[in-house]
Structure formats: structure tokens, C-alpha cells
Amino acid sequence: MLKSFIKKSRVKSPWIMHFDCGSCNGCDIETLACLTPVYDIERFGIVNVGNPKHADILLVTGTVNHRNKKVLKNLYDQMPEPKAVIAIGACGTSGGVFREAYNVVGGVDKVIPVDVYVPGCPAKPEAIIDGVVLGLQKFAEKVEG
Amino acid sequence: MTTEIILILIAVIVAPLLGGLISGIDRKLTAWFQSRQGPPITQGFFDVAKLFGKEKMAANPWIIFCAWVYLVAAALSVVLFFLQSDLLLIFFVQAIGAVFMVIGAMSVPSPYSQVGAQRELIQILTYEPLLILVFVSIYLATGSFQIDQIMQVEQPLLFKLPLMFIVLGYALTIKLRKSPFDFSTSHHGHQELVKGVLTEYSGPFLGLVEVAHWYETILVLGLCALFWSTNILAMIALLVVTYLAEIIIDNTMARMTWRWMLKYVWSVGLALSFVNLIWLYAKV
Image 1: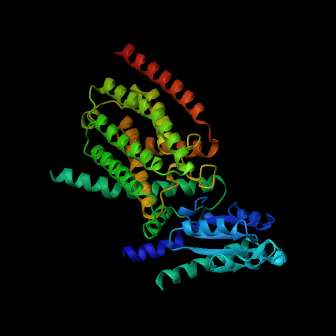
Image 2: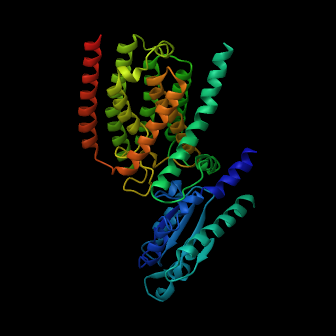
Image 3: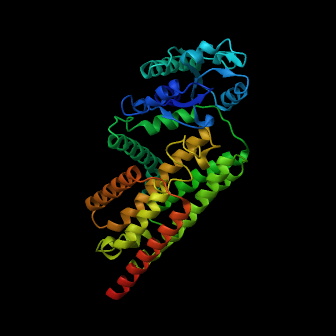
């Protein structure tokens, strides 16, 4: 019974951490807009934490470059299991228009495993919330599997 | 003997459940103030259950030990309160928990944790003398530190010690880590301290600290309840009004600096205490 409650709680209390790998700030503003009274993601138990050790879901925006890929990997490693990664925006999913640039590694999945891709330039808050919900489903499957 | 065992069970099991519900109501009301919907009032339990299901990651064994000592000290102080024990004993037991929290944060080299620990120490330094003054004035008004004897007063303590209740309110706000005194850790983890003393606690150990905080909420509200112990309805009304005031203050105040806290809380707290004690003696 306790185990099933813990399993249920995982989906009901996802704490997100938001990391910006050098995005133009468009996706970041849309991500933070989710926390405002208009979208109010806290009603789903989502809390925006600033500490990888407390986070369940990592939201990554922007293109990954050679400088910040180590930071991204480090943040991912510091998150305790079970965890999920959501890449946001065209830059996060593939590198976007910057994918050919000499300093760009590409999408987030070049460095850490990504569970959900949220497209858009910038991604809409509705799409980000959808992405988090999908991420939670994957997260639940991962825990059971 | 059996009543004592029942009281201990209530203190150990019901107190944290109540504390968790209060934290849920707190978040719901805060959301309402900001015209949001807010999480369900059972959110605190989901959070803690999730934390207990996470991977155990700790920087060193001290973190684990300190989280457990904090929890045991908080639970023990609530048990002692329910057993109507000595106020000074309860004070020392809860102080041990608070100090171990600081030791845990200091045992890791993380700068956020270190700064959080220093600020937590200053918070302890600010509220502990005031708490002692509240207990001493309760002793002066009733002639005992024993809760069972304090409960036997005919007139509510609030009438004799109205200013001391405000002083206890300051200690309560600091103890519950609410604005404007929430600078060793804040509800909003992405602020400059990244959770301060709680930075290095993660997964199940963060869950332990959270449960310990629920115990402490109940302990401090219990202390407030002593001020109107003659009538159960009036006691509940007093607690509801006090906690509502806490939430309103939390939502309307910005965080201040530790210098401001030390200067303001000590000067106002000591002044209120002296006025109240002189008034108490003048009346006697």
C-alpha cells in the first residue's frame, strides 16, 4: 500500500529544475510563464526548484555548446533517480537554426538522454505543460519497468 | 499509564498528519492570495511520499545522522508537550534539533549550505532568548514550568501576557521560516540561496526534514494554545487567527537582512517583554 502511494505521489509532485543552455530567453520566458497565475502549474504539485538534488524533472532550453555541456551533464548526474529530462524549443531538441554553428554540439540528447521533446520557437506554455504531463507518464513507466 | 501511551501515539502519529495538512492549507491560501488555484491541501503528503521513494544520495554520513536527530528531537518535543511535561525541557530538546540542522549543513563544503548554516545560526540566536523569555513570563504568571499546572489557570494567560503572545508570534514566524525572516531557507528554492541549509539534503533525507518541520509547526502552535487553555473553542479560534496572521505576513512582506532581523526582533521583543513583565508585577 505504501509503495503504491509513493508511486502515485511521484506523478502528483514533480519538482522541476530549469536549465538554460544559452537560449535566446524566448523559451525561458514561456517556461516561467507556466508558473504565473494564468497557467498556475503549482496546482498540479509542480514546484520550480533551483537545486538539482531536489529536482525530479530537468527542463532544458537552448542549444548545447562545448562550454556548457559539462555543466548540463553535471546537473543531470546530481539529480537522484527516478528522473526525466524534457528538451524545450527547436534549439533544445536539435540545435535549431544554430545546429551548424562551430561551437554548437546540437540538441540536448547529444549529452544526456532526453525523454520528451517540446517543439516550437519559442515553445508555447501549453506545449510545455503538455510536455511535462507526457514526461510524467514516461517517468511512471520507467519506474515500473 | 494507558492514557500516557495513547497521548504518545497521538503525538507521534496525529501531530505530523495535522502539520502536513496545515502546510497544505498554507499553500492553498497563499495561492488564493495570488488569485491562483493552488495545489490540493494533501500536497505535502504527496511531496514527502515522493521524496521517500527517491534514490538515497548523501554527500557524507553526517547529513543522514543530522536529519534523523532533527526528526527525533522535533518528535520528542511534541511528545513531551502532549505528556504535559516541563516547558524548559521541551525548549532544550527542540534546540538540539535546531543545532543539529546547522551541523548537518556545515558538514558539507557547498557554499550555499554554508551560508544557509550561518544564517540559520543567527535565526536561532534571535528566537531562542525570546522563547526563553516567554517561558519565564509564563512561569512568573502561573508559578510553574509544568504544562499540566499551567493548564489549571482560571483566567486565560493571554489576558495577563498579551505582549508576550506577540513576542511568541515573532519566534513563531522565525521558526516556521516565513517572510520577512525566511533567509536561511525559503519556500522558493530558486532564490539566491538555493534552499540554504536544505541545499545538500535530498530524497528521503529531505523528506525526514520536512516531517520534522511538521512536528515543529504543531509544537509552536501548541505553545500558542497555552495562552487560552481554559476554553477549547477559544483556543482553536486563537490558533486559527494566529496562523492566518502568519500566512498574511508571509505573503505581504519581503525578505529582510539578518542585521535587520536581529536589531528589530531583539529590540521590539525585549521591550515588549519588559513592559509586560513590569505590568504583571504592578498588577500583583
